Amino acid sequence: MSGMKNQASQVVSLNRLPVRQLRLLKQIGRLADERGMSVYLVGGVVRDLLLKRENWDLDLTVEKDGIAFAKLVADRYGAGLAVFERFATARLVFPDGLKIDIATTRRESYAQPALLPTVRLASIEEDLSRRDFTINAMAVQLNSGQFGRLLDPYGGQRDLRARTIRVLHKGSFQDDPTRIFRAIRFEQRFGFHLERTTLRLLAQAASTNLIQQLSGPRLQNEILLLLAERDPARAISRLAQLKLLRFLHNRLGYTPTVKRTVTAVPEAVAWWVRRFQGSVIDRPIVYLMALSSESSPAVVATMIRRLSLSREQAKRVGSGGCRVDRVLKKLTDQGIVRPSQAYRLLEGFSDEALVLFLAKQLGRQQGVGLRLLQRRLTAYMKNRTMKTSLTGRDLQAMGLQPGPQYKTILEKLLDACIDGVVTTEAEERAFVRKWLS
Ligand code: CTP
Image (cartoon, rainbow, N blue to C red; front, side):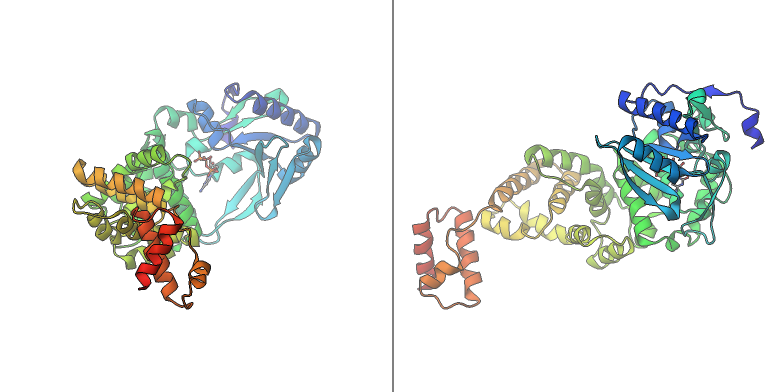
């Protein structure tokens, strides 16, 4: 590529990388020298080195045959190797757990928009030219004589300085509509802006049905990555502004209420993990629930299908929606709610839904309702591990005919335990007897 040849070579310092990674990259560069191969660090890690941001996801690319080179490295260092022939890539896992992805420099042609491309081998310059944005289309050579040499044929550094997201060519979003979401992800993460033509091309691509053609798993991946960013609320606003939420469901509105709930998610999650240490919350899923928190169960169900959520994710998200409101109303009511009533109201909701309860309430008002809710959630988390001493077998031994009433009795008994009405096994027996008579 002529632009490349005109460039004075510039050297990037890799000293920001942890010593282990840096040493390995130097060794890999020397190994490539021995084999007469060229090897480069590419993509996000180069961008982040220049931005002085931490990112130790090492993506390498090798001219001609990345897989053969990966095998060589694996042999030399006793690393585990997984090969993905179709994409001409390999993943190495070193004995100490360090992971490196190695690809072969390639060109991609898109037989059809929005589908995965077919792959042909190419030079490093061509490899960079197929990439999404200028800031992601830089490489750093690792061969020992050239260690640290920056390849930046599309003005990636210029755009980093100008804080700009810019595509390399007009058809970029058509080739790969996931880039629409990636553009927003990077824009919001770095506080950059979309370059004018890029924004126009994005809006144009978004106004067609290209995104509809994306498979569920690919759309899901982009959406969950976006929602996994540090502050997804801004990215969600941007999605709404660019009318992109309709690709999750065309009736998904970003109303002021939804926005307040979404904005309250960080505080809700923070309270939750502080209070229930050790509990793991799937934060992107909470955001997805917040986003659909005013939607009907039918809309939520369709969104779940569109995103091909796993059964586990679907269960969590499915327990959200506007159903939550009915329960929330009772839980924030100052009238008497016995602990067992709260337990029965909340059982079956995922932890993510419980965090959503909080976010909703935080988004509405602070006040008494919030304190009541927090108290009841705390009690519920304790009560849900409670068990009765008596089991079905005990009921049988007490002379009760097996049948559906077992479930009812054991539920009543558990409620009594939760409410502190019975506290010992003897009291449990007495409770059952009394209930039977
Ligand atoms: N890439 C691309 N088009 C895509 C996805 C990826 O051109 N749709 C290229 C970019 O050069 C990108 C690299 O592949 O930098 C690696 O992709 P990925 O790991 O998804 O992105 P990162 O840039 O590393 O972003 P992050 O920091 O979010 O991991």
